[in-house]
Structures are given as structure tokens and as C-alpha cells.
Length: 193
Image: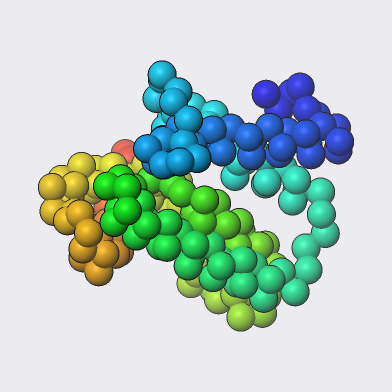
């Protein structure tokens, strides 16, 4: 898809298409049983519907000079996304009986965009040697998290948000430990670091 939208205006059009795909993912997925939902007869969780938006925003931001003010702007965008995300989760659960555990809603994209802006700001508060050395493990954490998610799923309690937040934190910590362990041996290091 990106090859079709290579130039600067094309990247903007690509981001608009990605936003449309993300909206289809939401309206045909978790919001399907609400008054704004639409019926789409195929699964929207995988493929370009969810993942194209963060990729296209990265393409847009690649050509923009970074500013340290993004730290505060990104933090604000993250906070708005955080409150919107959990408001949506509570609303979908209590009002519509939809349980969006481990899935994206509107606020999720804002949280991700906010974190991206904070990370790209290169603010002096982020210039910690230890944190910057952990970046090489990000892909490994992503790969290994499913090894942890699948056994933990039965313990996720619908409607118990505190427990679910604790589970997400535990999943991240366990994925990080698995990644660090795998990166310590020559045989598996290429998988995760």
C-alpha cells in the first residue's frame, strides 16, 4: 500500500486511508452492537485494518523535524487517549455487553500517538542510558507476549478493571523477562534482539 502513496501528499492520503481502515475495524468490531456500529461479514482484527494507522503515522512523522515540545504535547494526547480508552471500555462493557479486553477502541490510537510523540521528542527527561538500551528488546517483547497472553487469558476477569490492569503489567514484565533470557544465549538472540 505504501508504494502507491510514496510522495508527501501520498503519505497524507495513506494516513487518511489508514484512519478509514481503523474506523472500519472499530465500527465493524467492538462497536458493532452499538448504534454507530456496522455489520461487516469478515474479521477485522488482523490485516491492514488495525496496524496500518500506526505505520502511516510513523511515515508522516518521519519527514517532520523533532521538537522537544512534543514531550508535553504527546503527554497530553496520551492522557486524553487514556481517559477516552477506559471510558469506552467501561461504556461498552456496562451498556452494550461488549468486552473489549485486549482490543483497540478509539482512545487506543490516541494513546499510541501520544507515546510516539513523547518518544520522538528526545526530551532531556527521556535521555536515560538504561531506557535507551532497552529499545533493542521491543520486537522481542512483542513476539514473546503471546507466550504469556494465552495462559493468562482465563484469569482476565470481565468487569474487574484493576485485575486486568495488573494482568497487563504482569504480561509486559513476563514478556520482558523472556526476551532478556532469550537474548542472553547465542542460539536465540537473533530472535529477540
